[in-house]
Length: 97
Image 1 (cartoon, one colour):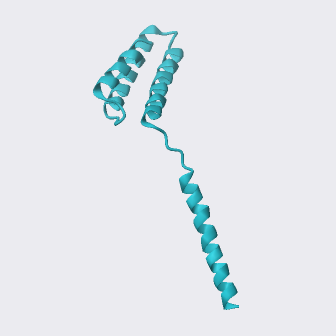
Image 2 (tube, rainbow, N blue to C red):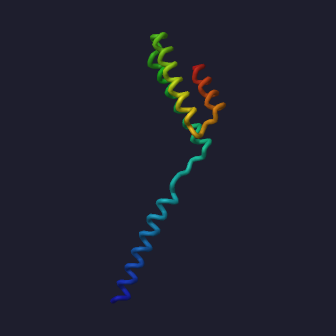
């Protein structure tokens, strides 16, 4: 009886170990390049949304684009994935939209 109880307890611990170990190793790790591409796409999409939203009023569009470029520039210069040169290049690209 004690042996059966011991075997059940060991089996339960083994099951819990494999169940939780499997969850941790299946995590998706993205490369730095992929994260950068996702961030670039996010900034481009946000700029396109601003352009679409304010396309009827050119002076308001200009104001909103400038505000967004300042915000994006600040975020990019504080982002660990982008160098100073890359951040400037992306801001210039966004400004050309």
